[in-house]
Image (cartoon, rainbow, N blue to C red; front, side, top):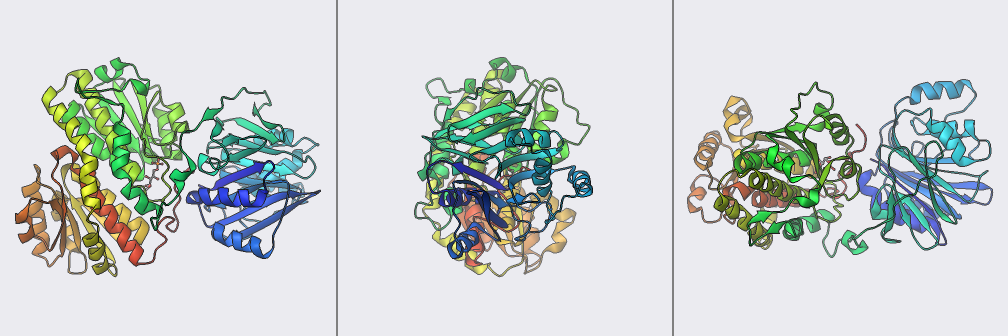
Amino acid sequence: MCGIVGYIGPKDVVPVLIEGLKKLEYRGYDSAGVAVAGPGCIRLCRVQGKVSALEEALRKSPIQGAYGLGHTRWATHGRPSETNAHPHVDCKGEIVVVHNGIIENYLALKSMLKAEGHVFRTETDTEVIAHLIEKHFRGSLEEAVRAALSTMEGAFAIGVFAVKDPGKIVAAKLGPPLVVGVGDGETIVSSDINAILAHTPRVAFLEDREMVVLDEAGPHFMDFQGKPIDKKIEQIQWNPLMIEKKGFKHFMLKEIFEQPQVIRDTLMGRLSLDQGEVLLDETGLPPAVFRDIRKAVIIACGTSSHAGFVGKYLLESLAGIPADVEYASEYRYRDFILEKDALVIIISQSGETADTLAALRAAKGRAAATLAITNAVSSSIAREAQGVLYTHAGPEIGVAATKTFTAQMTALALVALGIAQAKGAGRVQDRMAVIEELQRLPHKIEQILNRVGPIEELAKQFVAFFHFLYLGRWVNFPIALEGALKLKEISYIHAEAYAGGEMKHGPIALIDEKMPTMAIIPKDRVYEKMLSNIAEIKARSGFIIAVADENDAAIRDHVDVVIPIPPTHPLLTPFLSVVPLQLFAYYIAAKRGADIDQPRNLAKSVTVE
Ligand code: F6R
């Protein structure tokens, strides 16, 4: 949460910071600000609201400087307001700080600093950092930052500069991500490569307890003790065009439409078709791990946990091993029991979710191995897990995850098939049938995407409803959860998801004509059961929309509206059934005029607990 950007180089600094903040806005968007270094002074502009409001403020009262820092905020301590917006300054306004994360001991530090005479102006935890650096400043900014860091507890990525040690920006990381872009005569520091790629594809990822000093000569890396570090500079393959809307009204819609390609890219190079094999060598885990594990524990949050639930069914059916799915935020605090022969699979689009990272750290060393499934190359989770399987989804800007969800399910299918193959579980021809069908999925998703009109029309009918029920069973129960989450987060309509069989145990009491049901009913092993479940709803005046096989003519007698999907392998229906649900949520939110790519109260990368 929160996005940081800093720039030092020949370009006009304010536009660079603003463009960077726009790319980081998915991380938080309740207030924004920039600070630039003028001659012997700091020039600040901060607003409550989005980066567009900051741009407007800067248009009215422009500021200029040699280098600077920017911030877009997702409030943790202190409500969204101009005063609480970053950057924050010390008592004299000579030291400026931007921060992503939480300083857990800020109250103790604040009262100590207050007792020493420091004057606080905001409700934020961040302001203590500025005062701490002020307290320790003796002429060298990096030394003062190091002294301040030694007293700070919590998680933070910070950027700092000071009037009295000009020509440099200092940044440090313990927890949330920080990336340094190394351009020609210019250096950028940011929470994410998105803000860097317009300037350079050459980046270095800071590790925890590492700092960097940016000056005219470039970046100088060191640890929190000041010991220099020889940092590896990596070349990033994503190009800046991948982060454009390409004619779509919203990033979310563009990303929904990218799903066929995302599946192709995530499968690419990982299937040996003549042998009918899945190749998992690139994960870096020894083949014996996949052969010898007897259990899988999947850990994730939100949408990634829904992909994990689909993965559970795939692992059980294909690899014949038990699989549990755990919410990272719960798992990390439990007295969990982890068998030595378990594979821990960590799923995170961003690779930076604080709870997921903490759960990975707690599990590491206690299981056979940890395997990350993530979309973010060199993210904290990718670096800390023993093995990693990247989802090749490209950058996802819409806050509501869509294409990365599909990519995660694709990666999980590969893992399930790879484990099955290593163990010799099941029949080769059954695995081959899944592999062949995985490759047909992109085309089948394209068929769904070619007929969005009726889904958009349907969305119009339900725009004014307040409640929705989502039902699915077996592999489509997680899709009911995911469909309901999409509707909630972007349209703010209350939606509940249940496994079809659970309805009669309580939730059916909710049903009336004002609570429509979205039911996922492909022709699979629970088809008849789902028919009974929806009959119970129909008998209570419930309106039913069904996502069903396009060749299932009979379903029309049981429901009010059908959204057809092409038939596929029963284990792979989630890849298709999720697409109409994403579109339905999107079009309802669009009709309601909601802020689709940046829904209220949310942030894309949840780097705080
Ligand atoms: C919902 C959504 C979130 C994320 C969750 C985990 O659309 O995107 O529920 O799935 O915050 O994020 P990652 O996958 O980055 O760990």
